[in-house]
Every structure is written in C-alpha cells, then in structure tokens.
Length: 117
Ligand SMILES: [Zn+2]
Image (tube, rainbow, N blue to C red; front, top):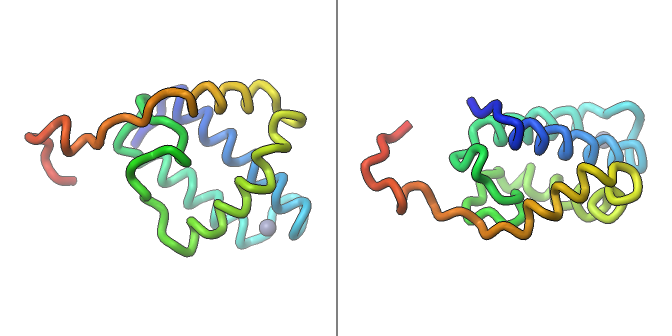
C-alpha cells in the first residue's frame, strides 16, 4: 500500500473535490454514493503502481477506475477542478505542477522482470 507524501496529498485533494461536489449536488457532509466513491478513490491511490512517481490521474496511461466510478469521478473533477484554485489554492497549485510532469512509463514496460501481484 502506498503511503508516501505524494499519495497522501492526492488523497486529500480528491477528498476535498468530492466533498465540494457532493455539497453542491447532493448533501452535506457526504452522501453514501460519494462516500463510496471516496473510499474507492483512496483505495486506487493506495494501490497505484506508480506510487510517488505518479502523474495526475487524468494523465495516467493506466485507467484503473471501473467504468461506473470513472463516470462519477469525471463529473466531480469537472465541477470541483476549476473551483479548487479558489477554495484550496495550495493543493490546486501542487496538482497543476504534478500535471506538468510527463506521465511515467508503464511499469511493466520499464521493469519486465516484475512479478505479478
Ligand atoms: Zn454525494
């Protein structure tokens, strides 16, 4: 399980975004659907094969979300993305900078000897 500062910050970012989205569209603090989405997003980050080297999820060459959750998180990002710069400027700037990094290569290409998990 990833637990580095980079992953932890991504977890915080996605949590803030889901909270913003839910407060505007559903309920406050968080409805069951969004709570489930948040748990899922945190789990995916914890299991991200790139770990601390990851780009932003939007740029990742691996689409690790199930279609159902992917649809939901897209809506969240579309709503909360532009608003992050106002509400959470520090996190937003970090996220923008992370997005400028090139997406890492697929680990299975760079480490052919990697064992299956
Ligand atoms: Zn909600």
